[in-house]
Image (tube, rainbow over all chains, first blue to last red; front, top):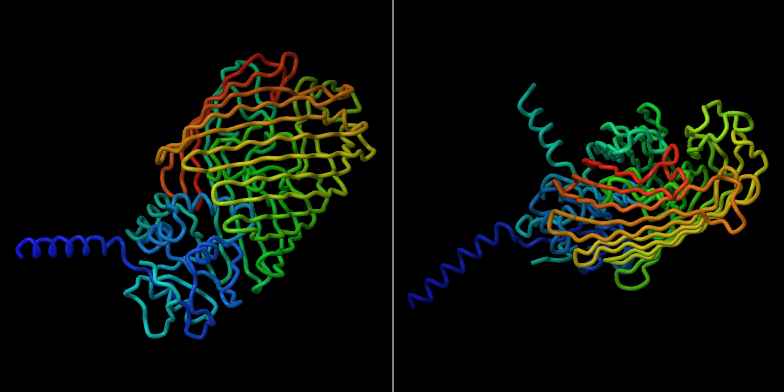
Length: 142
Length: 376
C-alpha cells in the first residue's frame, strides 16, 4: 500500500511537471464553421501554407501563436515534427521567395479565440484548458 | 529611454524570427539582414565585382532586405521586396528588387504580374536571404551563370498534391529583362570601341543588356526530405553597349536537387547555357555544377562544396572563356530561430589563362568569409 501511494505521488508529480510543458492543445474554430474534425496531416499542411483537401470543402485560414510561446513550440513539435528553428528556416524560403505567407501570430489563447470568433473561417490552436463556450474543438492533440 | 523600449529592442535583437515586425490590418512587413566580412590572400586580384580583395571588406555579403505583403482581398495580394546592397561593386544602395500583384484562382493556382525574381536555380528566388541556405554565398560557378536577376512579366504558380506529402509546382513565366535587372560583369579586353564602356583594359565593368521574349518554366517536386527541380528558358539577347545590336537566341537549362534527411544536408545543381551569334562574344557558352554535403549536429552544420564552371563550346567561343573550380569548407551555427553565424574557407582555382570569376587571370586563391544572417 505504501508503495502504491509512493508510486501514485511520483506519477502525480511527474504528471504535473509534464503538464507544464506538455499541455493538451485544442484546435478550434467558430461554431458556425462547417468543419467537425481535422487530421494531423491536414493541420500540418494548412499551417505550412500548402493546399489541403477534404475539410468538407471549407477554406480555413490558420492563426498562429507568437514565436517562442509554449503553445507554438508544442504545436511545431507535435503537428509538424519540427523545431521552431526548422520552421523559421522553412518560412524564410517560402516567404522571401514571394511564394507564401506565414500565419499571423497572436500573443495569447484569448487573442486566438477572438480571431476565430470574429472571423469564422479562421482556425487556431489553444491550450486545452482555454477552450470556451464560443468555440468548436475539431481536434485535441494530447 | 524607457525600460520597456530597452526590453523591446533587446527582444528584437535576441529573438528574431519568422513573425512579422509589424502587422497592421492586412499588411505584413518582414526582413532579412546579413553582415559579412571577406578577405582573400591574393595581393593584386579582386573578385570580378570588386568586392573581395586581400583587405578585410564588408561589401560582398552585407545587405538588408525588407518585404512588404498586403492583402487586397481574399484572392489578391501585393508583395514587394526592397534590397540594399553593394551588388554592382558600387556604393551601398537600396532599390525594389521585385514587386508583383498576385491573383489566386484557388489554393492550387495563382497568377503573378510585375517584376518577378527569375527562378533559374533552386535558390534564385531567395538568393539574397543568407539565413535560408547553408553557405555564405551560393556557389558562384553556377549562380553567376545567369546574370538576369528579375523579369518584368507574368508567371503562374500551379501546384498539386501528388500523394502524401509530395507536391509538384509548375511555374511557367514570360517577360523581358533589361536595365538593372540584367547586368553582366564584363571584362574589358580593349578600351577601344565597340565595347564603348570607357573603362581601362583589363578591368571588369557591369554592362547592361536586354533579354526579350523570355519564356521559360520551372518545375519542382518536393517532399518532406527533398526537392528536385528542373528549369528551361529561352530568350533573345542584345547588348548594344557591347556591340551586340541584333537580338540573338539564348537557351538556358538547369536541374538540381536538395535534401534534408536525418540531419544529412545535400544540394546539387547543373546547368548549360547556349548563346548564338554575336551575343556569344559577350556571353560564352557555359556549363557548370556543384555538390554540397553537410551533416547537422544539433546547432552546428559543417558542410563541404565542390563546384566547377566550364566553357561549353564545341566550335570555339567568340568570348574569352571563364573557367574555375572551387572547394569550400563551411560551418553554420544556429544562434536562435531566425539567426545564424557562418564561417567559410574557400580555395578557388581558375583554369590556367582564364580569369575565372575574378578581375584578371590569377593563380589559386583562398577566400575567407564570416557572416551573420538574421531574418525578422
